[in-house]
Amino acid sequence: MEIKTFDFKIHGDSRGKLVAIETLRDIPFEVKRCYYMWETTEGVTRGKHAHKKLEQVLICVHGKCKILMDDGHEKAVVELNDPSVGLHIKGLIWREMFDFSNDAVLMVLASDYYNEEDYIRNYEDFMKCVESGE
Ligand code: TYD
Image (tube, rainbow, N blue to C red; front, side, top):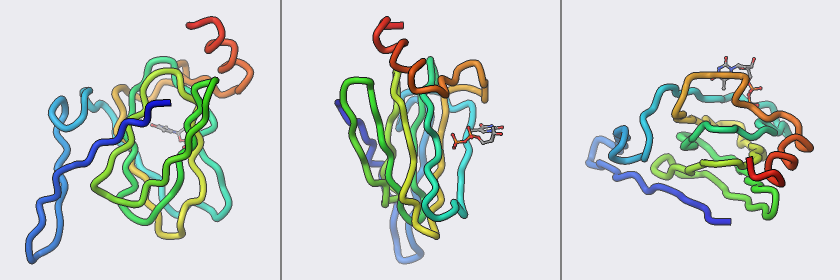
């Protein structure tokens, strides 16, 4: 499976570091939604779903966590531990987020508004979509 990450430019100076992410310049879609999760309970796995159309970039802006991506044929795990790196998730990918450090803040930039109808929350349904090429 191809893993696509973005290395955002770090504007660093003696005051510290800063990353700016511009729509259609630093990431390939227009951001309609940003959300983030923190104080994730130890041992918890979040996500466990796929999206029909949504495109996302995941950035662990503090701490670290792992992302499992599964395209129905192959699985890959990526550790996010750098606020200047974004993981692109596009297409029919089952994703799970786990191994959050206590201080982890995982931010997600998304191409559309929250829409429960875009979710596939059941793994068997996901595999049916993969197999039918939907
Ligand atoms: P959920 O989909 O369970 O989160 P995750 O995929 O990270 O495990 O979402 C948790 C709750 O937050 C659920 O009630 C739906 C709500 N929610 C929104 O209202 N808007 C959003 O953009 C997201 C991602 C979730």
